[in-house]
Image 1: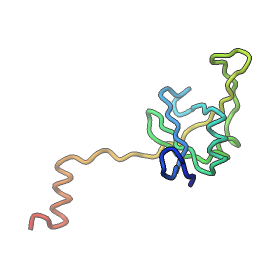
Image 2: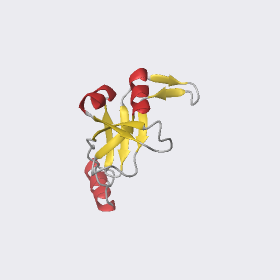
Image 3: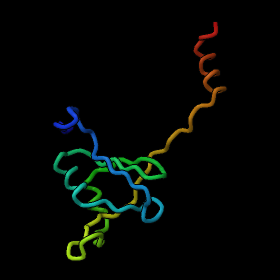
Image 4: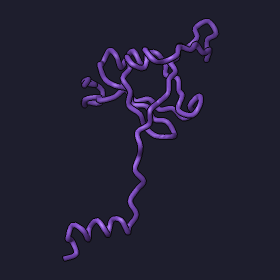
Length: 110
């Protein structure tokens, strides 16, 4: 874990938020973010509309595809590393009936 002086706590992940993936779970990450995670020796935490995935930055570079994309400066294109995000399955929230059944099983109601 890496000590962050500005927030006074340990950073566990390099956070990356993607609103619009390139295709389904296929996204591109700016190379500076990946190299920052490698330098700090912490994993990438990627949030996309389908869910959240946690990946090793070195593995992302090995398996990813390199893409150059021109954003603001035509002379200096951004270098993106593209790969598929493995999304962790999320449980649907419990309904009130399920909560009551769980409490009944634990013996809260006597």
